[in-house]
Length: 64
Image 1: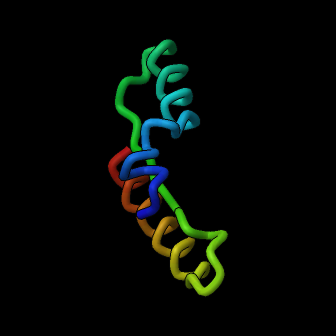
Image 2 (image 1 turned 180 degrees about the horizontal axis):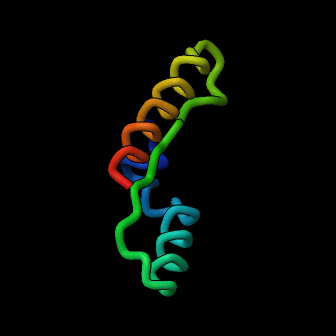
């Protein structure tokens, strides 16, 4: 994971908190966030990262 979801700068990640706040306002309290990070880092296996995120989304969808 990068510093956006963990570490000293994680508190600056606003998009996920915003979406959760809007959903909570509409009565949706249970939200599962699937993160695909490091896609912009040269040398990272982008296809693997995206594939793992898709697999995780499919697992979450089964419990929806």
